[in-house]
Length: 333
Image (cartoon, rainbow, N blue to C red; front, top):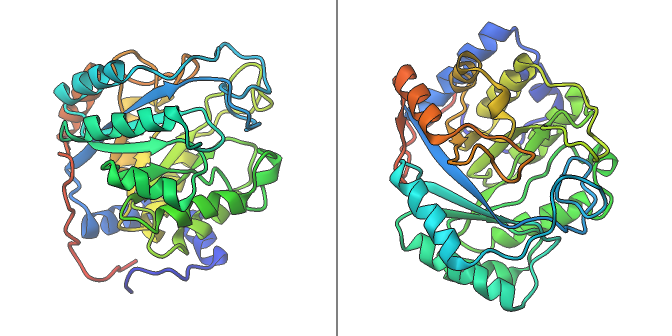
C-alpha cells in the first residue's frame, strides 16, 4: 500500500500493540524505504525568549501559572542567537530551532527582531525552525519571506485528552495554526509528549490526527516528559523505553516520510536505548553545548557525547536542506 491519509484509530492501535521485535522490524523496513538509515539529523534548540508564558500547559516550566526555577527573560539579542547558531553549525548541527515562550505571535517590534534572526541564521546555510505559539496567515507568510524552513506547533496529545493538560487554548487552535503554515511553503513540525498521564489510546489518537493531515507533517518530534517541580505534572511516573520505542515505531509506519525526532527527555536514555529508537525509525536528535535543551529544567546530551554515540553506531550527521529520495513508491507492512 502507498502513503495513507485515512488511517483509523483501531488500525494504529493494532500496530502499536504488535509484538515488540516484530514492530521494530516492520518500522525499520518502512524506514529504509523512505530514508537513508545511516543518517541522523542533529538539531539545536535555542530559547530566544524564556519564561513568562501566559499558557497553562501542565508540563511546562515556562508557564507564568506555576512557580518553577525558570524566571522570565527578555528576548535574546540577535548577535547572541547568531553566535550560538554558528557554534552549533561548527559541530555538525544542520537545523536550528528558535523557541519563544509566547501564547501567540504579535505584530510588534519583537516579531520584527525574530524575522531578522530567521534571515541571518538561514543565510548561514542552516535549516531554521521556529516555535512561537499561534500565528495567523499573514505572520506565516512573513516568516516564509524571511526564509523560515519549518514551523513547530505540537499537538502534545490526543484531542480527547488535550483539555486535561492545557485549558488556555484548544486543540482546534493548534490545528488552525498548522493550517495557516500550510498556506505557505514552510514545512510543518508537529508531534507530542509522552508521560502526561495519557492512555495508550491517547498516544494513538495523536498519531491518528497527524496521519490524517494531508500532507503529513514533514517533522514529528516525540518528546518524553521531564517532570518539572512546581508544575501540575511534576509527579508523573517515568515513561518506559518500551513505550518510547513503540511510539516511534508506530509513528514511522503510519507517517513514513516524516522525520521522527527523538526530542526532549533523550538525556535519560542510555546509548543502547537510543540505538533502539534509531532502529525503530527515529532519524533526528537535539544536541547542545550546555547540557540543556530549552531551559535549565530540560537536560540535553552535549555535542561531544552525541558525536561519540553516532560514531559508535556507524551513523552520520545529515546535511541541511537534503531532499530525501523515497526508496520505494509503496509501503509494505
